[in-house]
Amino acid sequence: MYSTTERKYQRIQKELIAGIIALGGIFLIGTLWYRFVEGWSWEDAAYMTVITLATVGYGETHPLGSRGRLFTIALIVLGVINLGYIVNRFTEALIQGYFQEGIRLQQQRRLMESLSGHYIICGFSRTGRQIAKEFRAEGVPFVVIDSEIESVQQAQAEGYMVFQGDATLDDTLLQVGIERAICIVAALPSDAENLYTVLSAKTLNPGIRAIARASTEEALQKLQRGGADAVISPYITGGKRMAAAALRPQVLDFVDGILTGADRQLYMEEFLIDPAFCPLVGQTLQKAKLRSQTGALVLAIRRADGNLIGGPTGETLLLPGDTLICMGTSEQLRNLNQILGPIGSQQLRRPRNS
Image (cartoon, rainbow, N blue to C red; front, side, top):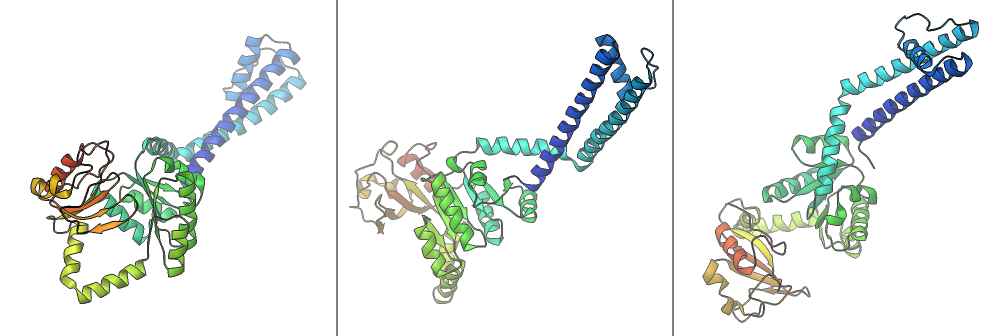
């Protein structure tokens, strides 16, 4: 599915090509007529056809009879109409900027084809805009999908890579590199659209992480059954946060500051323990000395089977596939990243810079 602008560009392109082909056909007809009907040489026939179509006003190459002149009149009329059509299409394309837009679309397509390990945001509503801001702050590559031209234009104005299309369609997801993406966020206004998007994404890329927005409890359950790895309900989450703000305001402020980096002092990050990169697999936290070496605090460990260990002790083992949820300053998290594996490793998330 193509964007409105891209469809217009392709239409203009097809019309120009059709006009040029028609002009070539008229030239061929004229040349053949003068060659076989009038009996002229190929050179004279082609020359007569060109000056007739160009309406330059030269005289006849050879004398023509009534039949030949009637054909020449018809050739002039067809040529004028065809050239006028081509000039009209070309002028419209030039004024509307379709050529520049075509170049931009080709560049964007090449950029999307080069994307790998990126995130996909479906829907650029208020939720989608906030997600895009967070992704930009994190410095992760992402692309936005939206079907509304107004939302697409707004995303472009804010400097985001955006594709206009229906996120529930396989073709749209394939055009933004769903098979190479690591995460898709379905933030469309309709629960049904989010469900279709998750189903399509999981079908095209079973290993992708799918995050979906749900407006009702029933939709939340259906999205989970549909394969969503995480389902967020703005109403449920918003209600819980408002209650927490009323009951535990300092705790909420502290957690918000860490999650958003608002205080620019402490951050939370997750690190995947992979035996191919991490030399500490099989050791206890006490023996690994992560706290003493880096200053970062291991808040929890998510085992490969999904079991969550909150507040791990020094006797907790580091096992293959564990995800460490850690808190610390930017420098502390960078040091922790160096100990757990190479900085450039794709298995680890790189801490944000301060």
